[in-house]
Length: 529
Image (cartoon, rainbow, N blue to C red; front, side, top):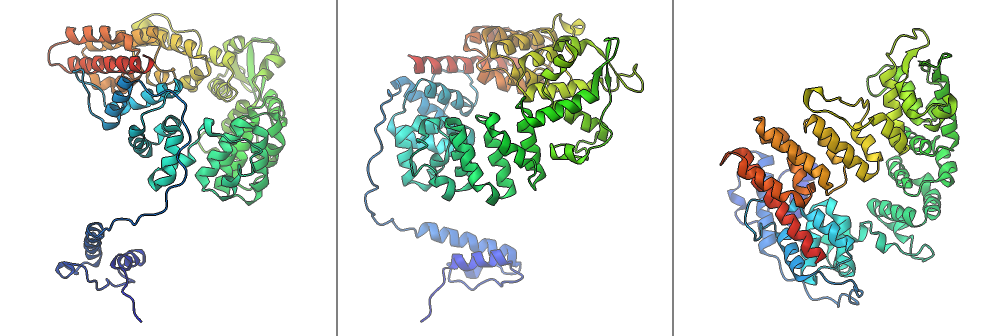
């Protein structure tokens, strides 16, 4: 008995093997005779298009199946106020809604709406949950808030529709099951990789010791690339209890795993690795006898013990090898070692001149030392050192303004400070230097921006408009303002729009920004009202 093979399967086989190895099949597709087979590759694509149309046009209704099981669990959260529900429908559809005036792309405002609604403990109407899940499917950054907001109905729907299965894999702290549940770790042993990472991350937040034990049980059988990401998950709840496991991982066959284990250990100031790095750091940097400057003696080789502690013998950045080794040692050493060994505060240490053991007047190592200290401050989340490295908030205006010396990544140092302090420092920077170098600093500030920071940004935009600059020269900051400016600044932005030349680029920019701020103000009022 012979069977007729599905035309789509024969075409797919030809595509996988290549038309040079597998000739084009003869098919009974409608219009297949009209396809020019002179170029086999082009002909294959045309036949595939015909087969696609045939498959879609000939789709039959799916036969009825058994009932989908028990209904979704009860969702006891209060439902959204009706105006907020209508606003969500507008945001999901991308329509501009009522209210007039130009506005930002509403898709950019959806994350703020979702985060606020989730924080308020509200639930959306059932009719909007499918649209919410579709939006989260298309945009990964929405998933955590969207899944939490969809609640039990969203998880029930995900079990019925394969397109929404991501809901079952999305980390949701509210969905963490008890550690002693026998079925708790089934997804770890049987799930997809993304599901396993999510499970481990949730377990570490809920019970760090149980998460470590789960990872330890399968560690030797995991692939190197998987071990690396599983190791990253240990950042949640990292404590000295993790040190023996991480110390053993320093001997892993994957250099990336070794480097990640070393970085995690360096964030534990009391770890054995931190102690070894402290010993190397003290040998590399010492206070001169007169106490007036620091002397730098970088390592002369990267021995086997240094390599085991995560320091690569070859610089991957193009820097000199000794500079690379020196930076890695200082960045991994506990910051407290410097005050303990010198008796000086971070500010006093940073004020010292830096020389080397050969030429004490040379300052060639000053930037390397400062940058390594900055990396250590970010890695160890040390606000005191971050504050000293950033320096006081800038003062003055324009060309005479004193720019702070912040070797390293100022935005990363800023992120170590408390949110209000970040906003104050950034506002002062913008008042002194304008918006030219403020994009990354603003990105490190919590949103929505505080009223003082928002005022500083609006004032700087007014100055940019008055100076004759074009809006697109500040496009990055302008895009951020639509999502982050305090809505209370809408009136000030409307005044700027009225004062700008009619039909000018700035007039349109300010009008759009004001409309967006009014939209956000109404959006948040509906949620809280």
